[in-house]
Length: 280
Image (cartoon, rainbow, N blue to C red; front, side):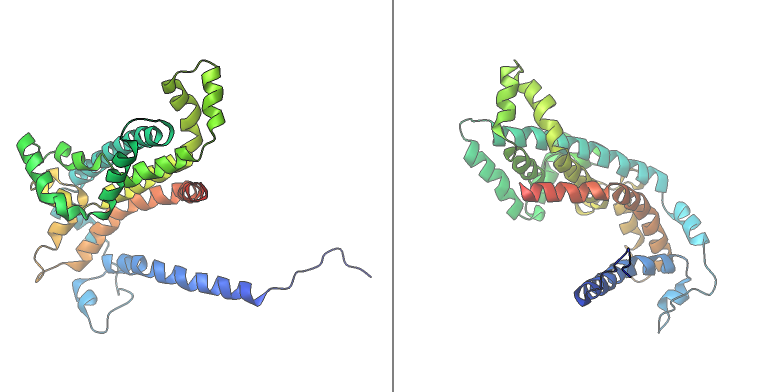
């Protein structure tokens, strides 16, 4: 008697792949789990040898102490503002520049694009001093504008949008011209909606980079209530001989939570955007 359902045999290679992925996921999640455990531990438990894995009594007061040691809400607001301005700026500059390099013909297009892409190979520390001198001359030290200005442009974002626009068929622009659309209308209504996955990648990568940016804000900001939260966390470990590790871990968890939520919500768009750009 024939059965209506036939079970497929489980392949050993599939089991091995899932096992490897499970081990990799556990290794990736371990630092975050360890951070959470340290954030509710006492300083003696953190420094104990061998280390204490589970705290005897969770110290939830460590999270409340963060607000006493840091102007957390002020720094959080500065971080959100910086992230929003940088993200909007990079999306605007990257889409306009990427479209111009990919779809327009003008004198010096190739060399200019090569110069922009060449900046990807130059470490940001090389032009740190010149950027500081410019910001100082403009009177933007200890301001949001001084922190934001160097991050409004990204060679990586321009290249990403250049690849996305270049992969679109020419027939789309030709059809728009036949319908009487201007270049601006063609860009806004026809081409831009087709590269939304790549725009999503620019948004997510800019948010992650801006939220965790430390070096440049550390150079141009000195007042506690005018610095982003990454710099505020750095001040907690300025004295390496007397670091309150549970407090640092609690503050890091509070700072990390919003960006984790954003990434979890939009992770599918990131994967789709990277796959779309890679295929193009």
